[in-house]
Amino acid sequence: MKGTAAGGLHMDATMRRGDLTVRLSFSVDKGEVLGVLGPNGAGKTTLLRALAGLAPVSSGHITLDGEVLDDADSGEFVEPCDRPVALVFQDYRLFPHLSVLDNVAFSARSKGAGRTASRQAAAPWMTRLGLDELAGRRPGQLSGGQAQRVALARALAADPRLLLLDEPLSALDAGTRLDVQTQLRGHLADVNGPVVLVTHDPLEALVLADRLLVIEAGRVVQQGTAAQVARRPATDYVARLVGLNLYRGRVDGQQVTLPGGGSFVVADHGHHGDVLVTVRPSSVLVSARAADQPAPTGMSARNTWAGTVAGLSMLTDRVRLDIDAHPAVLADVTAASVAELRLAPGVPVWMSVKATDLDVYSSAES
Amino acid sequence: MIGPAVVGVAFLVLPLVGLVLRTPWRSLGSILATADVAAALRLSLLTATTATVVSFVLGVPLAWLLARSAWPGMAVLRALVTLPLVLPPVVGGVALLLVFGRVGFVGQYLDHWFGITLPFSTAGVIVAETFVAMPFLVVTVEGALRSASQGYDEAAATLGATRITVFRRVTAPLIGPSLLAGGVLCWARAVGEFGATIVFAGNFPGRTQTMPLAVYLALESDPDAAIALSLVLLVVSVAVLVGLRDRWLHSGPFR
Image 1: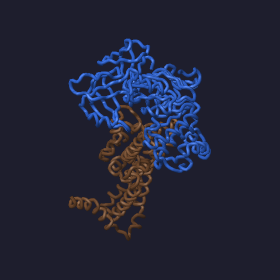
Image 2 (image 1 turned 30 degrees about the horizontal axis):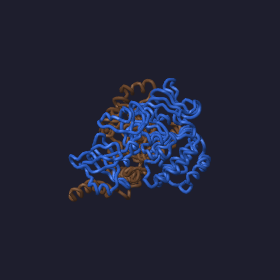
Image 3 (image 1 turned 120 degrees about the vertical axis):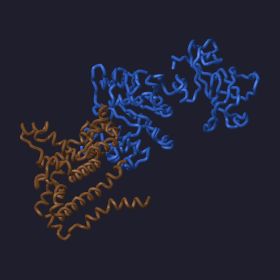
Image 4 (image 1 turned 90 degrees about the horizontal axis):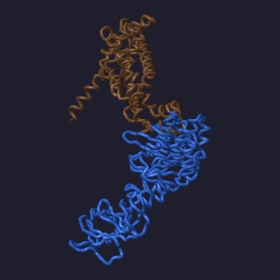
């Protein structure tokens, strides 16, 4: 997973912003897109600001292609304007007084090119991102998707050796999002250096990133490929994002004991000690439970436990039940089942899960 | 509600109407051409313009400091530098006299070491006007710097712009309309300055007698001249208001 020593981005540093201390250590190879996923306030933007040089690290260092960008020990610090790093801000920050063309030409102009030369330098990027027709417009006259493209063109035109993206799609409406997402993936594939993309949207991360770093409260809680993270979440935050029920427990043979009460019977797995167990909401079977009725028997499912419906929410093609029990669980049922079983908050139910539908993995593995 | 409002409008507008009605239109040209009146006009233009230039040189960096510095004492500093906005100008004049007067604790050294005497000189008029008018510029520009968010500065820096380039190509253009508005406000306030000027610089025709001072003096000896000068000041004020209509009364064009 680690990049080679010379090329790419290496960071091993502590950053402070307000009360939050962000301690991160990672590498990104050239041409690799690292997705940094985390809830609001986890330290994602703090990380980007440190990489761009807008705030110095408080200890540790950042190197890019072997050159030191920031080193708290030696005091080396490359000013943002001297870093070969471009940042696409979440709110784009297009200069409102400049045309689209002059926004894209800004970096060339900053580096000393004249008006005409800088516009010429911007021209290929304008064409590449399909902005030629918008060249004369002011940022105030652009749609969200267009502004996003201008912001990306402006950053790419700076010819960065490290590209940073802060929630690149969050300011877009759902329709535009899908379009931009596809285009963005294409453009990121063409970037020479490493790309760091920060987001709290798992879909954005899964689609755009080669590898994920999940951070919470300033610490890395999980890293791996998008598929690994999505299949085997290490924390409740990630589990919620990818829509899985996640439990921590201790395994003994086929029995997993949960500290919060309850236990699961799981299939053969070969793990010992502390494990994580996930189950898909769609794998949880829900049946009616009359008072004092014994647990249903004669089922193939080896896990059955009692609970009470706490809430219902409509998903596109099914209803998600939030069920109070030991352990609590999210279960997906069809709208027809909701009607048939008369499910509503407060209704008692049985839940059943097949042992083979429980995925067991050690907490260290993820 | 309508009644008091109408009275309010009348109260504010009638005096101006009265001034226009009483203006000796036929002899207006000759009055403004008399030596004393022409000198007051010239002096007012010179001193107010110089005071505005000085305010730009000192006030824009000050506004930048107030807007961008996170130093905890900044709130107190802001209150102090904007105090002349609410301070009676006469008090300002007295304070200036105490500091820059011949025996003032700065003035005596200016006099001893450089032979510079500020009070009762044209330079003194400029000092008094700058003292009173500069806060208008500072407050206007500071507000603009605040709303032209630092985000644009940061974006420019990540695109390779040095601090000076950032100011030249991003910050200054963004606050341009406010620089203009602040400058005009500052200039208008300087033209109208009376209290601090008469205390600190006195009332010497041709040297320290600006238009407002000339109006005050002429009111006893030559009311027509006073009215003519007042009309000039009224026209200047109206011109300033019309000029600022878009930029000052509404927000800037970029928001």
